[in-house]
Length: 418
Image (cartoon, rainbow, N blue to C red; front, side):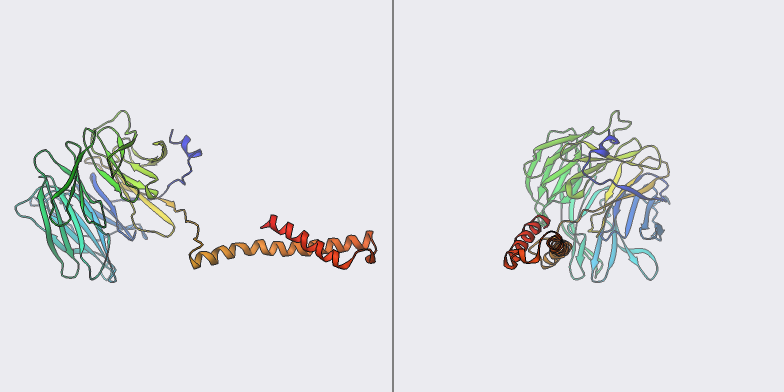
């Protein structure tokens, strides 16, 4: 069905750009840097970062746990500091730590930037989100995170002083597992928390962490959730399928096929594409699937280089001038995992007439038509003169009448040409 839909889909397809190799085990988190320069794959074998311009992996810290094994990274995100052009990767670990790595141009690699360690809380980091992925050099980055023991916290990251400052930390209580946290309202800075168990959604006050609202949807579980605030939508894995809801009133909109039969019942990643017009979902059958959100029909399969689980996906959230990037990665345990990058050319919106640049662009579009109209005028005058010389005497044509006839004829022809 996905193959047939290519002939009817209004969307341009994603084309495979490159396959990146490096991870030696399942990938648990996949993310692009805000500028689209780097892509990060983190999981059971540590973290690998590639520079997309060269498709080569770059140096990054090798972190081990207490038993000497590679640190297991479970979540990741990025912050780009404008002005100083600093790329900062933020990673959460299985042991509850949060590490920050900074790109160094002079050393062509990432180095430890800072570390948030909570000695009394060694629970796995489930989710990390930043309010703004690009911040000015004199501003604080606002980060929210959730852990497996039910805690949700918000922190301020100061890139200059290299310090974390806690805003709040609240316990969601028994029976509420905060699988996904995000800043659902960028203006109010409130935090949305999606519970894996009970399918509950809470909105927390941005400074105190107090529960401002709580709702429950009809689903068995709420797996990884992706929010599109602009379109008032969120989509999540509900155990067997992917479901799309309206964010403002939690009304169910439509269901997307999660794949039948399921080899394993593990949470699968889902992301919005093309400004919310499409979604890409993971599978356990060696590919990811792109769906049209308007009708829940499959648009395209994103093929993986190996067989097995394809659970992790990421979409490049930065504004690239010409392309949108999508990455998928393998999630099979104890197997090498590849990261496959796809790209799709962006549709450029038509220029606005209210914009001076747009007005110039629209005027330039009229120039070829005006040239054609002038050429048509010359041809018309030449043809009429030639006809008069051959078939009529020159004195038989009143001069004034001929001029007015030419003007009227040219006006009519020009209206059709323009």
